[in-house]
Image 1 (cartoon, rainbow, N blue to C red):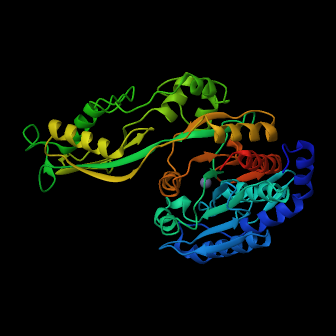
Image 2 (image 1 turned 135 degrees about the vertical axis):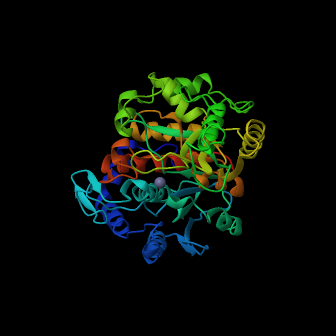
Image 3 (image 1 turned 90 degrees about the vertical axis):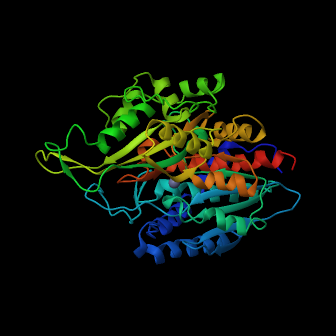
Length: 457
Ligand SMILES: [Zn+2]
């Protein structure tokens, strides 16, 4: 077993495999595995079947596992039960792709110099194939690890069957750690790994005060107006200007970022200008970069997604509506318990407006990763080895249900080794990936596996 890899040799190995890499990526990108579209069900399956044959062609054992939705794929390169097992998670389903903004056919794999265009190239087929090539190098070099691949085909629809499926296979999928490659750096200049994801708790607030529309001339003044009452209730829950949640106890479980985390945020390459441009915002609540990052990654929110009720047509129709609905959700940060949030929101609404019916909608627990310890050090070392710079540990504002499921069911720590860049157009038209990220990624995965192999099981 090598005590270190030679960066030059590994890079030139990656380059020697480039045409093979591109052929594999082309094959998988050209299977339109759009998990949300029922008419693509056969294509999603075809992607899973291709993935099984690909893992086998690399010398692994691989199997397709049925779920109540799309299948999942598990591949294994087992060397010795005494060695630590690393499971690499990626997903092979993709977002829908159509519309006039695509400059090329989304399911044609097109190479333009170092750039690879096509739906799924960066999210998440390119990183999946990159990890596979990196693992092959590590295994050829006799690194003492067992490497498993867990490839999901329902990530883009919220992983509805993933937890049940891995629970049913908990023994076959047993692992010592998981590494996920499905995240985006903050900027090309600096590798970044998320060390936490926000969770989510959705709500519907409904208020009914009558049976039909009434005339504001004849009843207005005495009649209750459910739209107005919901607006008042929401204003009691959250300060619209600052976003500060006013429900007592809402912030009590929030763990503030450590000094080291804040230092990492400061050097991750985030700028308010890019953030505003990427999201087409005219203005923000705050204009300081660190404050924006703290708000989108490390703080919970109370957001109103829509209020429905009353007249929505042209002109003014002077009705008093009989009922109104507000769709609300809270993004949750590590240590916040969705069930407790449901309890305190219900209790608060009951006190302020007992006629409002609160229904709790779907929940996702937040995820807190580790930024210290041997695995985090292995990620740091491997990224530095491959890309020349240590990664910064940041957070993600969104939620990935599969991560929490893997931690819970496989009882293994989960780490991130993402390779995508902001300019790759995650979920956007003209999605792309590039060879420098693939070449660096092959080196990073090989070196990460070598470092994990050095750990005692
Ligand atoms: Zn993804």
